[in-house]
Length: 333
Ligand SMILES: Nc1ncnc2c1ncn2[C@@H]1O[C@H](COP(=O)(O)OP(=O)(O)OP(=O)(O)O)[C@@H](O)[C@H]1O
Ligand SMILES: [Mg+2]
Image (cartoon, rainbow, N blue to C red; front, side, top):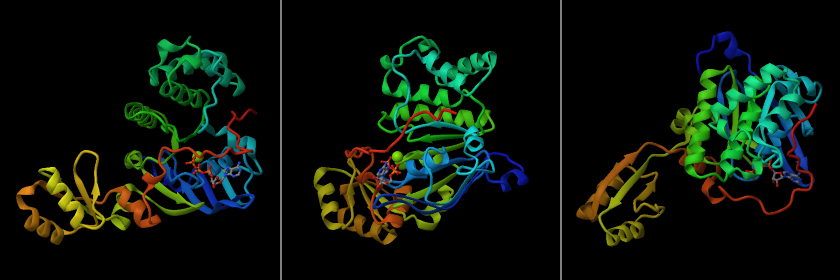
């Protein structure tokens, strides 16, 4: 949490209670409870199908819940949808820019829809394009931009009107490491410079470390919600990282240690290993090991402890089935 007085911290900007949503036989949200404080960067982390987008669509008033409540800035999304929606800037999971328009035209149209007065609108467009480093692309047709650049335009667009809460549904999915990092740089800058609450969904575990709190969701349920540090301390396991000297040592270590994982860089990682394992490894492989260290619990180990599987199994893959009613359009008043 950045700064913040006690009274501010006490009043959550988003409150979700016992939220449920079903699509036919699929229970997408199975009683979600959470509250998000002002000015925090809040990550919703979960594998494909966890229910992240469903929750976001309910918060954006695009989808009605079957049960429970969600409030944004004190406004109930079902009973006061216009007021609730007014608090929000959204970057949807599915791209929603108009490729036939220029960058500037896309942003301007959004500002018009949200009734941002002309001078303020022009200033915001200029500032937000500067933030996402796309000023020089102002007059380019959106369809000519790269995937990463389009994502940055969508982030700029979510910031054109005044909103207290910015929701980003998988802003970095499918992007290369450099573009992903850039997007997080903008988000952190924004959070420092503007009085905003950021809600970001992702299934990249490495991204949530810098967030204030992480909510791990799976199967439509909240499995854990806390700071990355507290999650590590509570659910995480230490691991031993070994850098073998050669291929023979590497395969020997892998063969003799159940659960050992070969990393692409050549290291072998043994989750949950202890000092006793380190001693044994040094005893058996001695000179075959060029480096060995016990690492602090990773967030991967937290996820594994909570769900019994690795989030990597599904990360980066998109579901191949068509979703008949999935909406991703811009909320228009
Ligand atoms: N319009 C729809 N019709 C039917 N089932 C749906 C629809 N939208 C989502 N689902 C199902 O609801 C569950 C939750 O989906 P949701 O899109 O909320 O998950 P998610 O966490 O956003 O996943 P992803 O990481 O793939 O974006 C999944 O089982 C999904 O297949
Ligand atoms: Mg989703």
